[in-house]
Image 1: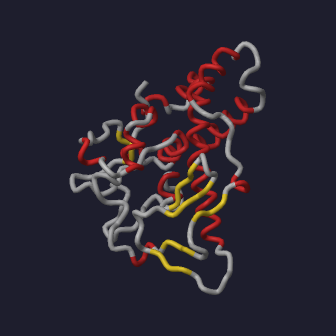
Image 2: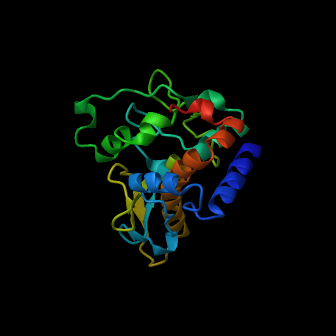
Length: 225
């Protein structure tokens, strides 16, 4: 994964010194006014879900990879991954337009389409039936385990204010352990939910501090700025 590795190295270079250090102080202040720039430590995040609640994709009756509203917004790391996998045809710059009625009552979707990220980043391509183009004929994800961050953390999401990872009400396919054990899968989902949030911070910082380098990696051609 050369592009992914180069992106990780770029982040290390940018984050290795204070973002406010001269000559970037004004840039830092402007970015800081827009968002929080400190990455979240997964160890400080609680899981807000019934003990032992594990999503069970094998029993799903409402595939989260199908549907016009099941659109997946890609991050820089996702784009880099698809480039390395030679699956660039799955990167779609043209995003669907949702009506007020379509997003009404759907807080997550409403928040997404009203975000700056929605205006900037591409989405995972869907076919004419609004099914993810990464799905195989048998309904399996052909990108797994290198699927987008948003897919890796679903159905868990992260709430910044409460520092909690919660199980989405949208997912009805789950089972609950009754043996009292802490399931590694749940911990992994929490990690993925926090990682997905942190990548948004990283992307904003890299776009502010290293846009030319991102262009050299071939990532900027998929963004709308």
